[in-house]
Image (cartoon, rainbow, N blue to C red; front, side, top):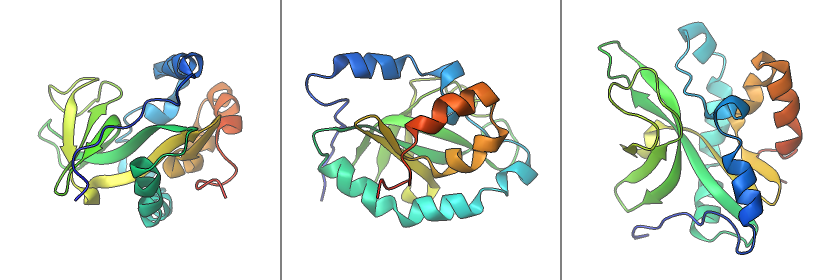
Length: 173
């Protein structure tokens, strides 16, 4: 059993970097936006989701025993819609914790189709709902498989800002 474990927010002595990252929310963090999107858009990403899921054990290894420069662990999950429509909304969760039988996290933005849920709401998910993962290693963003395939469709300024942050490969190898 893993017991409950909260993520380490940032390496000791790096509050300035964490503050800068907090500023990346909303307008500057397109990868954090909840993106249910029309079905034809969602269908473009199955390979990215498959790759992210294939490397989920890598995420959990580092989550459970982060290196000194690894922090800001987050998961993207497909959460069933609560507006009476079928399907799910993809949403990023931070402040991840997990036990043997469940995973919980906080919504990073206000979702569009999840009823009363708002940014900061605690959501419980099952592993099968995970569609992407991410964490920081130094100044590099690891994971973000779905973000990488969406880069060409982002606002050019956002993409230009985001591209150098993304590690050369999702697992940093």
